[in-house]
Image (cartoon, rainbow, N blue to C red):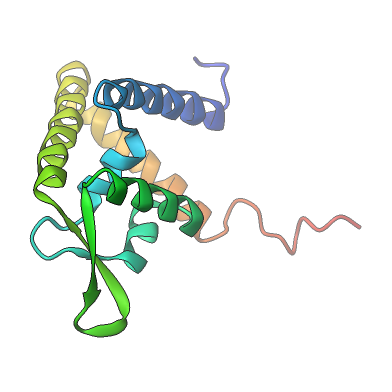
Length: 151
């Protein structure tokens, strides 16, 4: 992979992970996005719907579709937020808790398998490089739009 660009390696790796999780989820009639949402909802106190999108890195439209499907499947229920009358809290149903446990098991299996095949130093470096990339993107240190305006 030495001749591949960094973004190519990131994209193809993520697509492989995404495909793997979706194949697992498909066995139970669901998707990776649903599993990720189940893991992002606080199982005890629920989660405000407005904080789920940023937490999951999803656009509001995609999140709305995912939550609607989850509600139709009986995985979640929406309740008014007692601290904010305009807001809604998302709670897991009992069925949602079961599916959350399954999703958590799949994520932990993935993590354990990778840790069994990668040294602690290699993993530490992976996390460090990922953090640098995320910070540089967040701080607009890669493409400064003022410098790159076409003349």
